Amino acid sequence: MRGKFLPLSGIPIYYYRCSACQFCFAPEFSSWQTEDYANHIYNEDYILVDPEYVDIRPQANAQGMISMLGAQKGQFRHLDYGGGSGLMSKLLRQEGWNSSSYDPFVNDDIDPASLGQFDLITAYEVFEHVPDVRPLIQRLSNLLAPQGIILFSTMTSDESIVPGQRLSWWYAAPRNGHISLFSKRSLVLLGEREHFKFGSFSSGFHAYWRNIPSWASHVLREA
Image (cartoon, rainbow, N blue to C red; front, side, top):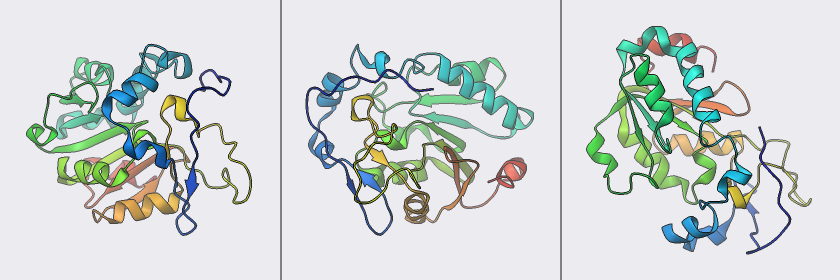
């Protein structure tokens, strides 16, 4: 679901597109500090542009995970990366999952390396919010067990961004933090940095893995 479209205001943000892999990014954010994001994006008005962030999306994501992997819940340790308030993980624990949540903005006093490794990592609506995706994929790689999978959501831009035409794709939205826009090719190349295989279930839901764990084989057959 989409949030509220606001009139142009504030700081102008320009996107650039790589001609080789079609990754689209906003260089303005490379110099921003945590407080800049807190002041301009993740403030009290953020809910106006992303009204499902607080509870609707975490509830839906939890139900999706239960439908996909609920029968195997005792076979893996789960981390919801970028989990905000931790609601999705809380709902999964209520269903008997071994689930934890970590969010760089919410849990800034925690070193993610101290969390150990996880068999399943979910990252819903995370990749597009990160200005430099290379540290992100390295961190996820370090958190993932040798036989584990990363399930993540981000819309792919294939056929939605046309060279030579003004960027009008609704998903390109700096006000709600969508500052890195991926083609499928760019996701493949990003994963290859950490020797990940890549698969997509749809234009908005994807997976990385190195070795397929037995409990997830039925899931990755669909990717």
